[in-house]
Image (cartoon, rainbow, N blue to C red; front, side, top):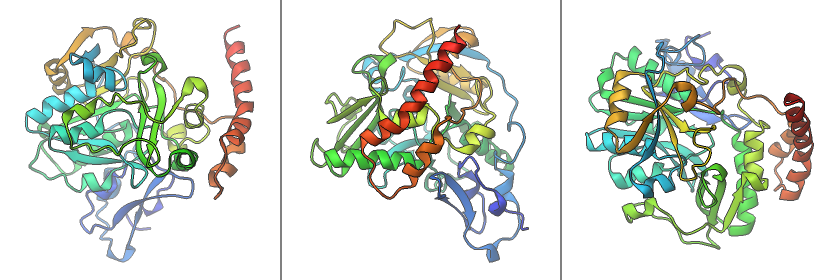
Length: 395
């Protein structure tokens, strides 16, 4: 067996192993279940340097660093437009904007409507940074952005905890200057199969035609009800050109398709009720709650403290002195709380697998377009199970 990643399956799909290969023979693709996996394109060219394995967070026990939270804040942008558009309080955007002005390049995530996927990209201007606004609840494709990183630049890297842990290993293994990097992750539920996302897009395209715009969160009915899909297509709504103006940060026009979790949105039910989660997220995740290799962790500050706030509040936790200084310098209102308050409502354990997931798998793998009514019928038994589980737990 060669010393490369060819024997690793069902991994996190972070894609960082594609970066250090000196022969450029490590690539990433979707497997048959709709999750990203890396593979070796030409075994004959492998020189067995082992770099791809060295940076892999999946095969290493523990984290690349042993940091604990230094300080925890409830936070939101001082710019009300940013706060209203971002998924929670807008801290991630304000941190990125600050570092952009300090000469950093931003490795963030945008949604590519042509490819129908989330992808990491490099932002060098404020207009380019706007594309990263908002959450994207699917796996991101990382290799193209990672290939643009050089040894001399300064970077903010934003990603899931496993992506950040692998990237931290890359910095360490390649002996890069850690002072040139700020790493930011977020509280992560896990990643759903791209098969579920593609089935959802098929349903949307029946209504709006070829997709031109997608958003995963909005606050039309308040922050606590912000789990909402917004979708436009060629039949309805104008094409979004992110380079028009910074003002496109605030898209005040409602999308043609508005579907909320509270109203039974199909994608959110497949995702948040654990019908189609990455096996690695269920079995191997080691990044829940207060475990992170990042300088900064962000997320929604759920819980009792801000239960009446509908504008959006971010959890902002510094795990390093570097992260602490960046948060404090950002254009945000900051209120310090104990970590337990800031992380209230966040997962302490890995996502699971829905008891009726076996009913969903055939539909995900079907080549046919599945009507919404069929999805609702198939997903209904799990709603009943969850209802009784919740009441038994609270007896």
